[in-house]
Image (cartoon, rainbow, N blue to C red; front, side, top):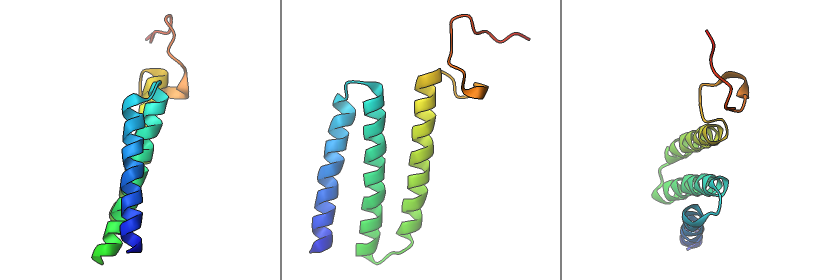
Length: 100
């Protein structure tokens, strides 16, 4: 019964994060909401793995958390700098051209 309540609370929190991702006023709010949704998905995988008696679901949840974190950093870097391959983290300016 306790895990059913936890699952229901996670579903409500996931719906709230999804609503924020759709309605967020800025792109950073939306990225943060998608990251929160991914974190709650990881928690849902862990809880469902415990309910099903499958401890190997914890490995899947940890892998999902790592992919979620790296993906969030990549998306934020792309929105900030406009390029994922730009070395040194320099912001893109209008006169910044590769010479060579």
